[in-house]
Image 1 (cartoon, helix red, strand yellow):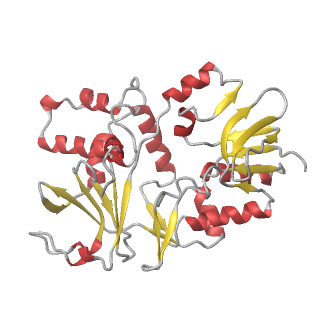
Image 2 (cartoon, rainbow, N blue to C red):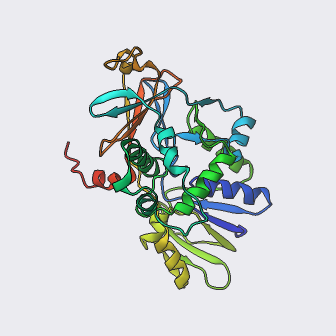
Length: 343
């Protein structure tokens, strides 16, 4: 059998997309994946009781990115735009709020012309605490919550320049809009799988890569799989491992990566996110009416609070599905990892 032109290590969204593009260009491609499934952070389960897709990983399609929308439209995937009411829980009371507008009061003041700094340093410099009013203090808290939750970034570490560039990129694709793939993100993976099958790209699951030898000549990859330790060789290897895998040194390179690569890896960061999805027999919140409000929570889309563990919750609005999901802030995710699992 002829040696592949490219071995792709990792079958997440990046690896699958790269495989499709390379195979379309006429290269012979193979994919190695450590897990027993493809998709990486995309992980859809179908709940037979609800008869609905439940996302355990990526859930929202943010904006109109062509990488998602073009295959979705070509295969008639139904997209539902997120709609509904925003509520906040403040001082033990539910009230209507506009989380995003409050956060924007602060975020719009950032620019990439000043020297770069962390988001918290920016807040301290631009909005000193000894001169702030109550509204400004609230806006700072919401903006910090946005950076932690929606960007999955540590406000003490994330670059203001990066945040500015991220917001500019979002604006180009209407990133303030959010959508659900009605049948679940798995359907997008199914589209990728079908095309890879047509392009004769094999995917080897349960194949854990431990060594990558990249001396002159073909790259040799030595993985462990249920079939034993079978080496793979290719003219090139494209590595799409998660950052945590690369930083853990669980994959050995021979020769070792150059020093500047190690320095770059040490400086990169990936925010932690932990989420919990709760499925109910019925959407009980539709009957709840907060004190002093005329309307119930029937139109609830997002619920924000300053809870230290799960400050953000959302429903499937505008679909009336009895599912509600909670997500942690970046800096509190680690606390959940250390909590006991005996109950």
